[in-house]
Figure (cartoon, rainbow, N blue to C red):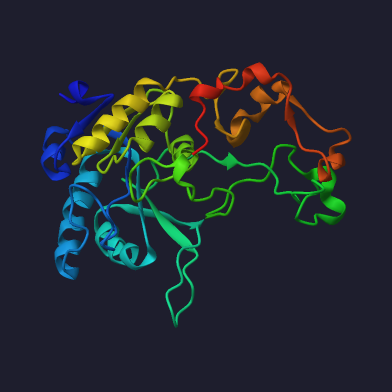
Length: 313
């Protein structure tokens, strides 16, 4: 039954469309719902009463868990306020793994701590059987001189040449701030944020479902990483934008046989267990302590996906 929905963006209310998806059929679900902050969506009122909004959220959260496979993963992106309520619902029906803090400063809020992050709740359908991979990202460096920002002292010979393991605080992926890089959507996420979640919890040909697909960010990420996708979207215009972008996306975010995430012609996320297979494609500083002022580089620029199809968002 699910086959006819794979690799499609369907227009409609997610609660109705979920009825078509069988139990335990999707490898990863991700939701970036309206935040109830009076954003300017064209087909949705982002200003529900407090309890009305929470009641609506509980319905689609339950559906996300229902359709996720026993070894699958569930991600919910929102501001911390709403995530605290989401956990009350999810803790009853799924297994908590992490609260990922995504460093993304927003507008000042007066006499309060200034908001500087969004949260991504990471749950698994069942405890102990989930599919999770360790990831690495490039070492952080001084922009002018290129030296490592962190002082590792006498331990530089022990550094991983590509970069450290990713924690639950993400400071290296930034919001889309420039209009020329945005679709006509009020809450568009950077695609390489989705790359990271997909690489962490899925394998090639796994199915990723997004019930608030917007302009196709999750679907594009899934396709370029060799995964299958299902998207639900209420707005007809956003569906049209999504289909056009997906049509121009290739499954080519790969080095050798390993799927990776690119951004601005650099690889920014790899799986830790893929390093031994892909390190031959990099120039690695020697001796290893030289990584303090030299970063690893791809040997051949032809390995980087075609510029027309590598998104800078």
